[in-house]
Every structure is written in C-alpha cells, then in structure tokens.
Length: 400
Image 1 (tube, rainbow, N blue to C red):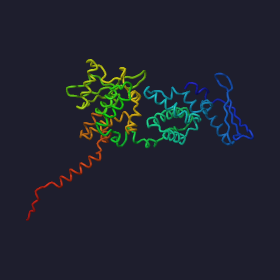
Image 2 (cartoon, helix red, strand yellow):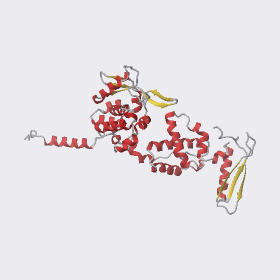
Image 3 (tube, rainbow, N blue to C red):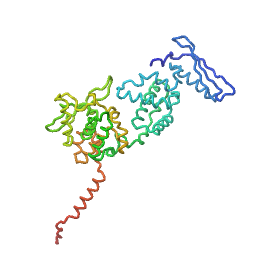
Image 4 (cartoon, rainbow, N blue to C red):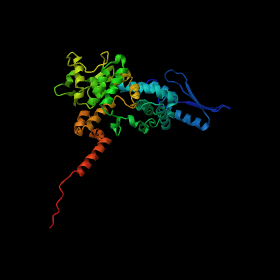
C-alpha cells in the first residue's frame, strides 16, 4: 500500500498528555517518532474532553505502531485514507463497475462521512448515511453504488488492522426499494400493461431524442418483445436473425469494459433461441435493410453509428423525464425485459420454455412471472361457475 505503512514493526513512540486550561477539550494527547526513511521527527496529536479518552487514544496509537501501522494513517479522515489506497480498494473491478462506484464515492460517501476518521466509521454512522441518501431521493442503484465503495474501503481498513470488522456491511435498506428491485418477489409489477403503452413510450422517447431518432423506439420495442437485456440487443448481428423461422440466436452481449465497450458471451454463458413475434418482424426487416446485407452488421446502432448501452439510451432520450411524465416513474430500461417475460407468461408459455427463452439459471426465478394477475383469477372463477352450471345427465341411483 503506497504511502500507508511507513514504519518498521515495533517502532518506539514517545507520548505525552498536555492539559490546557479553559478549553472545551483540554487534554491534548501527542505522539512522536523518528521516520526511518526521512529521519525526520513527525508527530500526531488530538484533543479530548476527558483524560481517560486521551490515554485510550495513545494506547491505540502505540498498538498500531507495534504492528507497523503509521499513526498518521490510524487517525486520518476516511477521504484521505480512501484516496491514498484507492488502487487497492478498487482492484479487480471492470470499468463498467468502477465508474459508478467512483461516482458514489465522490458524490455521496465523501460529502457524508469523508471527514470522519476511519475508526469513527461505525454501523450506526453507515446506517445514518444510507438513510440520508435515501431521503435525498437517490435511486436504489445509486445507493448500492455508494455503499459498495464504502464497503471496499472499510474492508481494506480491516485488512490493515485499523478496524476489527467491516461496519459498512449493512442490510435492510433494500426494503425501501422493492418497487425498483430486479429480484423483486413480484417482478410482474415492473411490467408495462399492454402493447399500446409500450408503443406510446417508444414514440415519446423518440420525440425527446435529438432529431427524433427513430432507432431508439425500435430498440425499446424490440427489447420488450424479445424479453432481453439491452446489452444483448446491442450485441445482436444480422446473421443472428433467422427470418425464415423468425428466431434470434442470441449468443453475445455488448457491455462496458476496460478500454471501452466490448462484446462477450451472454450473462448465462450460453447461447439461447428467442422468438421474434409477428408484431416486430417488419421492424426487424427494416433494420436489416439499413445494413446493406452485411451479415456482421449490428441490428441496432445509435444515430451516429455507435454502439448502444442502457446509459446512452437513458441520456439520449431523456428517459427519466419521459417515464415520469407518462406515470411510470419507477420504470427502468431493464424493466422492458420484465415486460416481455410477463407477457409471455400471461400468454401461457410453459415455464420450462420461458426459462430457456429468458436464459434464467434457476427455474425459481422464472416461476415468479407465472403468478396470475387479477383478471386471470377472475376468469378462472367464471370458468368454474360455467362448469358447475352446465346441464348434465343426472346421476342414476342404483337400488340393490
């Protein structure tokens, strides 16, 4: 860790407590040591209201020195500690994950708790920070991307011996975001109700885009009707579409990665076949015609010929404003996939077929789309009523 551990194990400290009369925190605890590299004599001090607290602080500093931890690191603010160790804290992350984590760190963690010493970060501090972010109207994903870098930072502090456990591993806050959770117990509630609503959304997004680019509407309709992820839509090539049997051989997705966007395998690491319904076949043929017959061409591109992502779609169409105006303020791009899966379930697609189309690794996830809606329950009751009221031959009583 660059610049963090600068002392040999067991370095000798000199310490003292100075009483300064008339101050709210009159007990000033101070330690000094000789830096083994520069040979300078740095010091660290902090003031306390009670002498017992000052002595406890000195004991902690001396314990850190015995482990080779620089006393300056032991009490430095969270922001300073995090910035000094960020390469280690964020090691192993892809760019698509690193970017939102760093945004969460800069925009929420630092302003909220960055001024506190690492050892002052407790479960209660993290609870209050998360509650503040939620109260400020941050979305679930934003809160998640803010907690994650805090967890990683405090995990590094634990590895450095600054804290005994990771206080940032809090739970329970997700309950406030049930309407926006991918793994919601009832994902059907995230779906658009019908075809008219979907096309209305698509038209509204096109109208808000630069020069009213129709391609954004095509992306939205195609994603919903195939129940796929936008990264999979972005990765779709002309050669993947079988226009004879109208099947999409879905084999790749386009996602952000180190150095920019890249193509890789699907989330489940296996190809799958997705039906292309009659309602979008004309749309698909028009998209294919735009490629001049190039089988390797992408079916969907941005207005300047670039690859698309969920963030690009959001920004280019003013997604958040549009869905709010239409009364679907909780709707995210991924909910277009929920829409398609819900429609297929309501249409009676068998669960084992739906699982293959969706690419779910677990049948349990797929079954959550099969919960009957209110109309289905009502229809079932009507069918039973008709069955019971239907005329039938009376049973004969057999007399022995």
